[in-house]
Image (cartoon, rainbow, N blue to C red; front, side, top):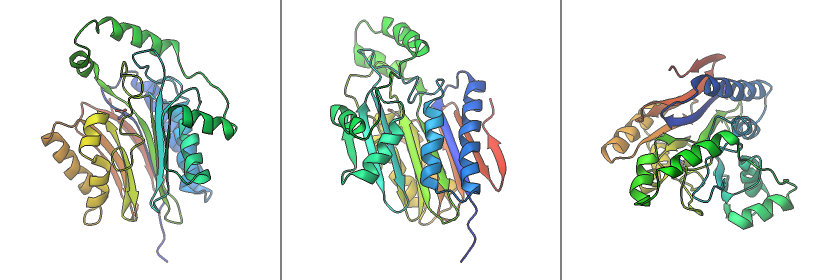
Length: 295
Ligand code: GLY
């Protein structure tokens, strides 16, 4: 059997990069811990869960602790996980859990469903022993108050203008057995309507995986959903290496007004990292060598 080289890539959001050093530190930690597990013959599923948890616990990112707040000032979060063997689990509009990615994995492994949302997702998490945890931070409350001041009328037009930071976190990894896994998590868009669900937990849009490869998208969720961005990129991996497939989808996205970034890995372990936004924070390790976004 052909030897498979392990690899891991993570991203911490597209759009403007505020606090770049904090983002670098968080990504380096998540990707290094994940690569360490891969080197000890760990499964990419465990790697992805652990590395996404690290990003969710790093408050600069918009996921887990430090998630963006909705119009009511609540932190409703979306997350999902998928493997190249079509395993999938997701939670949407879930509140008061520390690590939504953990609950998404539990949905995949402990239920016959793919996606649980809102109260149902919270009840399921509690039944699995996941305790109450408040993910709001003072930093994100300040952002919420500042942005809310500008939203006195014409809500939707103004909301669109306020969507300047396209933020999710995600990790993609391939292990020695060729299992490729992707995990993604977000607090969504600041000041969104309560109950709004973005692309992150919707299969084919912000996340997709099949035997040819695995992709996650970050960016403006509504547009990513409209254009099935992750599914498009994975479909092209039948014919093209990961980066070529991703670039083709980014060109398509640009032509159709969809601002997004993509990370992924194809079945040969080749990496995808591309975006059409102002910037994207990312980090990967392949063949023991780390590459990191510049700012
Ligand atoms: N891409 C994340 C969101 O729009 O919720």
